[in-house]
Structures are given as structure tokens and as C-alpha cells.
Image (cartoon, rainbow, N blue to C red):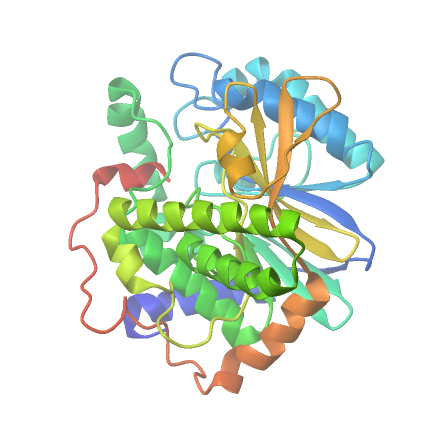
Length: 387
């Protein structure tokens, strides 16, 4: 990581990693990672309200009965906008469900920039011991969980200022905690710094903070291109009925790529998030639980890592079916789960060993910029403070 800010982030993440105890993860271990719930007081400024029944049903009726441990990866309680007592009063049932994971499987609570107060002033009413990070070792391989704000200078030094602005202005103007604007330079820098740290150490980092799901360090455009390539390779060997499904899936992926290009040409030109070099699959992001179309989570189960999308009947399944996904209904209720991307952890770590760190000749030179000839946006919307 180059420059004074990059050096600061490198030092911050190095200290965070070194100061976090290592816990074992069994090869058949199961855990689900959710982040950025932003639990409020239940009023109109509470961004979590719309997806509250969805998350509760997913945790209570899917993950808990199947023996999943729960990782809360930061910004769970929205303590920069609301007092803790009001949050706990409104979401007591959900907090009790978190505690049930602690009793029956395991609960890991990691703080973010919006609930960092729990580190300074822990509360017995908040289940789980708050920590800054989590390290899990699976044989020779490691997964490093942290919220992600540590990869930005602002939130490490001026988080109190951010909280003041949110309470004073964002609450009054009802500005939500939705994702950072797509053209945000800060989003790219946060991810690229987190990626570089994980790549240099040949480990998997799982973050939140930006509210943007990320799987194997690939942008959505990268993932769609890779999926099209896989489908094209499978097409010559497919039976006629399967060929029709492949044709429909490829057409859907192409339309989505074109849509993303129109929406954000800068990211389309950038191609890869981290320059033209081969991308190691070392950075994942669980997304958030306050999306307009539901919530996303990361699952690690039986040797696989998966990015999943939960949604309810308010969201049409047609866009998922056209893209070749197969949503599964949760019992007979209005809630659905679909696996967006999935891979074997052994395969992920094998690619990291071959592509990450000095193997690609990168060493610690730091993340490249957006790519040759492409300038990143000079300005960011001030709403990035809400991430």
C-alpha cells in the first residue's frame, strides 16, 4: 500500500490481525456471516424495519436448526443515530435470537464504526462479547473477519465527527444508511486496500462496511463475464434442453452487463477492481441486511463458501430465474433464499496460494489505481458518511 494513507491502513490492519486470537474452524464447520443491520428504534428512520421479519425468519428457521454459528460482522446496532436503550427495547426478540446462537452453536460479535461504542462501554444486555476482529484457522488456511472501516483513514480517526453529522443532519433529512454511491472513489479504495492486505498474507478477508456483496474479490461485471465463459464451455457438451437453458442464462448475463455499464461506466472501464493483474480470491463482503430487494449473507458450510440472497414475495423471482438461479422457499412462507455464487474453500485457498502475495510478482507494491488512462471520480457524495 503506497502513500501515507496506505501506510496507515497497513499498520492498522497489521495490528488488528496480530492482536486477534486464532480459533479453529472444523472442515465441516458451519457459520453464517451477516453485517450492517443498523438496528434503530423501530421508527421511520430505522432502515432495518423493512427486512426485519425476513432476517428473523432466516436465522430462526433456517440457520439455527441446521447448526450454523453466527458471525455479526459490524454495524449491527445503529448507535450513531439512536441510543442503545431504544434499540434494545425495539429489537429485544432479535437480540434474544442472537443469544440463542451463543447458547446452541456460537455467536461472534464484531463491531463496526456505527456500533464501536460497544467496545468502550459493553452492555450485559447485548449478547456476545464485542471484538474488533475474528480469526479462524482451517488447517493451514485462515479466514480473517473484520468490519472494513479500518481500511479508511476517516473512520479510524474521525468516527465521532461522523456520528455527530449523522445525528444532526442525516436524521433530520432522513438520509438512510444505504450503500455508498456507485461512483464513490472511497468504496474502491476501501476494497482495494483490504484486498491488498489479504493478498500479501495469503488469507481470506471477510468484510462488510460498504454494503456491497463481494465474492472472491471479483466485481459483479467480472463475475458475470466468468459465468458466461463457464456456460460457453459447457454449451457444446449439453443436451438440447440444457442448451436452451444455457442460451437463456447467457442472454440474461449479457443484458445485466450492459445494464451495469450504463449505470456505472467507470467501473465497467476499470474491469477488475484491482488492476490488470490476475485476481486472487481473497476478499469477500457479506453485503448488508437493509437492501431494497432483501438481504445478503455469506455462508461457510461443509467446506464451501457461498454468497446468498434472501428476499420475500415483494420481490419478483423472475430476474433470478432468467439468470439461471433457482430460489428455494423457506418452508411454506413468503421468504426465499437463492445461492448467488458458491465455491469450495480448498479451491479458493489453492488459487490464493498460486496468485496472491509475491507469487504474482506484486509483493507489497500496493494496489494499483483504476487502470491505464482512467481517472477515478474527484468528488464523493457526503452520504458516504453513512456507510
